[in-house]
Image (cartoon, rainbow, N blue to C red; front, side):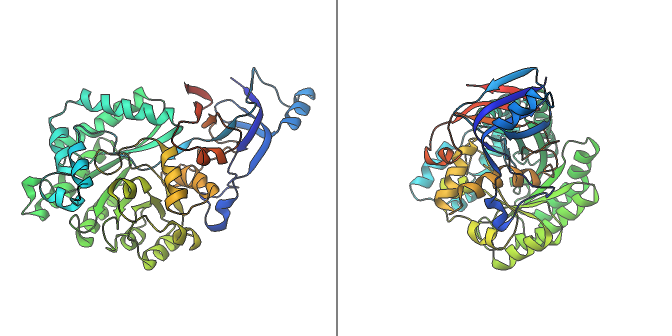
Length: 418
C-alpha cells in the first residue's frame, strides 16, 4: 500500500549517496528535513518537504492510498543492531552481583561462570525454550526501534547444541518481522571437555562443525573470540581461514580485554567487522581503515562490566567505519534497547548525536553487508523506520531512559505500535 506521512517535524534520512557507510566528518551529515513528508510502499518512493508533497499531490505527480499525520514527531531509519547473542538459556545475575562486589569478569570465567555457565544451561534447553527467549528479546528490540538484528550462536560449543541454537534463530526468522542475520560462533570459548586440548576442539570446529553449518546453510557469518584467555591469533586465524574457504563472511570479537592484535588480524583476513575494540591499538585502527572493516563498538559492555570504553573519537577521526550495536547477551550487556546504547555512546564515548545515529543505522547495516538495502531512508531502499514521539532527533538523547518509539515499520508495514 502506498502511504504518505506528512507534517513530520524532523525526518532523518542519512543520505549516503551510494556509499556503503559514512566516515569521519561525513557522519555529521544526517540529511535532516524539517516539516517533512515521506512516501513509501515496501520501499521509499519519495522524500521531501511537506510543501513539496502538497504541490506534488495537487499536480498528481505522486499519489497515496493512505495519508498519515506525524505532526510533532520525528522519523529515523530503523536501528540495525549488528551484534547480539539473544538466543541462549539460563541466567547470570549471580555473576553480575559478584562483579559489583569486585570480582573480575576473567576470574568469574576461570571459576566456571561467564560463557560456560550459559553453555551449561543452553545445552540443557530445548529448541522451543531457546525460541521462546529469542522471541521475547527480539520483540523488545522491535519495540525500541530495531528493525534489523544479527544473532550469534556460541553458547553450545558442541556440534549438536550449536546446531540447535542456529535452528532456533532460523525459527525466529519465521516468527519475528525483524530482518535477522545469523552468525556461527562455535569459537566463543573452549568447552570444558577440551580444557587441556584446545587444538582438538579447533580441529572439531574446522573438520565437523563449520562444514555441517555450511552444508545446512544455517549461518552467513563466522565469528571468533580472539583475546587474552580465549583464542590466540594463530588459533583464530586457523578457524577463520577455514570458514572463509567454506563461504562464510568473517567477523571477529577483537581486543575486548587487551590490546591483542585481533583487529589487525580481522583487517588482514578481510573481515566484515571487528567488534568490541576497547583496547584497540593505533595500528589496529589504521588496519581497519585500510581494509574497510567496520569497527563495531559495544558501549553496553564497558558500562555493564565497568571497563574503559572503546576509543570512538579516535576511530572516527582516523576515518575508519564506526558502527554501534547492543551486544545483548546474558553476561556482559543485557539490554536489547538500542536507544540506551546511543545514550551511552554520546555520554561516555564522546560521540555526537549525529555520529551515533549514523553508526546505529547505515554503518550498522554495513556491518551486515546490507547498507545497499537498509540503514537510510533513500529512494529505492526498504521502508524500515521508527516514528518517535519527539519533535527533534536531539530529544532522543536529551530525554534519556525512556522509550521514545511510537511505532516501528519494516518493509512499509507497521510491525509495532505503542
